[in-house]
Image 1 (spheres, one colour):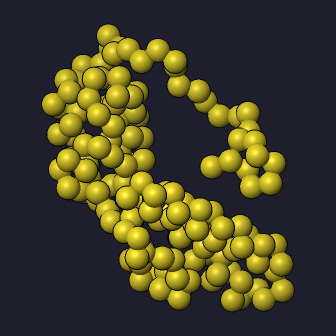
Image 2 (spheres, rainbow, N blue to C red):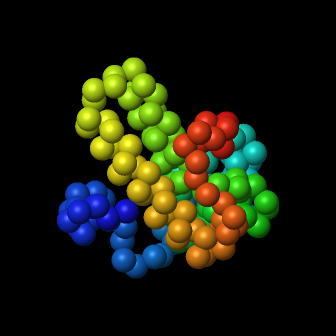
Length: 151
């Protein structure tokens, strides 16, 4: 996401190559990579963790470069996606941690501001996912039930 108040995204971070081509040194076929993704998802890994494992352990830098769909599309085809998207889940976990911290440290105003900003991001992301029909229109975020939603 963009920065909240500056509208910029920052300059640091690695960039993917513009031209997507299959590398000659990749020794896995499309079907093998797809079966690896399904196996890792059944083992409880999230799509971002699957991407890291494919990159680090299997030497597959980009799933799309192989000519197949992305990881989430493969998981959706095999009905292995979670009901709540991964980025929204991580924001909710962050909000839960901040709330727990603020219960112990009531005078920490920086944490209070962090909760406000995190909830704002959650609401913007929910609005986006509702427009894209990923989440149902009746779905809404409640702080009290957030712990139940994640577990």
